[in-house]
Image 1: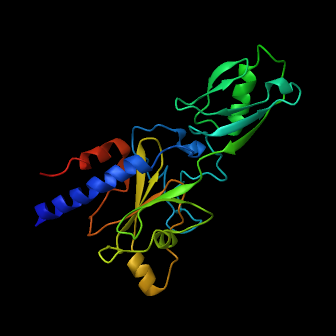
Image 2: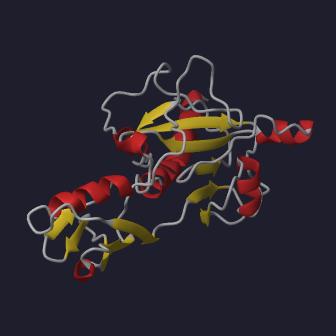
Image 3: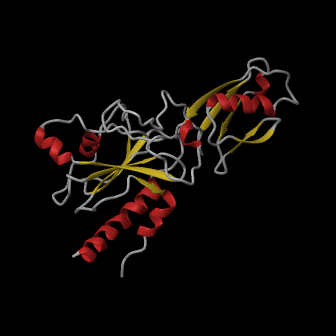
Length: 251
């Protein structure tokens, strides 16, 4: 029986691992996710809050108060230099992460925040302009989103508009299907370039009890997954690269 259960789990995780790899991109993440860890975060360094607006005592989380947006490919920026308006320009972050500045050439900006970008642009114009005054406006960017996968009515990518919980996100995605295992709803959250944190929620128990105090609030880029049958225990932290071990279907 153990072998059959393992095969079922791996087949489910084949779909799950593929969705996570494709859906949870680091674009637009907060400054904390810039770290490129090769080791899993420890409980002393990382925690996912299971209660809205609260983190586990003694477990400093990766969340930062009011984190700044990081630039992504295809973001559109408006650069204004009021003292030298001939250098005013609108630029788009190219697929390689660069923008092209008038009179200053290419500048890699992907992953920078707006304050960091202002300093980078000042440095780029250092040989052309003397202490330029620069303002930068983010005109177009990828809107916050979440991914709903597995046994929901309408799996897909949804705009994250305001504060939304897992239960609400399931409703937005069409609710549970008849074959869903809503006592085992998984949330995947990227905590660094290499690691994804997992959290299991018993939505069935919460709804039956009429108590949503343990319902999680989603962050931009989160993915929730509703399995068709019990997946079993998934480690709390998964290296992104290791998810590939589940992608090979079992013969």
